[in-house]
Each structure stands twice: as structure tokens, then as C-alpha cells.
Length: 84
Image (cartoon, rainbow, N blue to C red; front, side):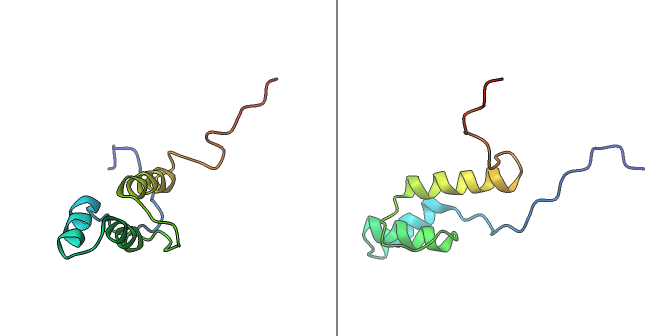
């Protein structure tokens, strides 16, 4: 008999990468900080654009993506509430 509450199944997620060690490894292999951050972002499933990512930005977006995937952050969060 099941006594614990059921957890809501999360949608498909990419495996979590340790961004800081990956970023440092890429720099040790000769990449510039911007190149290492852009490749780290790409490997985490973020779009590769002409924008240079920073490791901080990558981690912030990964955090928000995880919050949204687990149902803790929705489309209306952060929007102003209408007064009654």
C-alpha cells in the first residue's frame, strides 16, 4: 500500500551538466572565456547565437529552466497582479 504522496512526473529533461568544471576544462584546453561559456551553453541545450554567454548567465538560465520544468515557475510568475 502506498503511503507517500505521488510526485508529479517532470517533462523530459537533459542530464544536468556540471557547468563550472566543463567551463574550466574548456579554458584549460585553450578556449577563451567567451568561447568556453558559449560551448558550455550549447552543450546544456541553450541556443547558440551571436551573443556571448557568460557562465553566470548560463547557470541562471539553467536554474530558471529547471524551476519551470518542475512546476515551480510558470508563465504568469513575475507579472503584475491586477487590483480588484
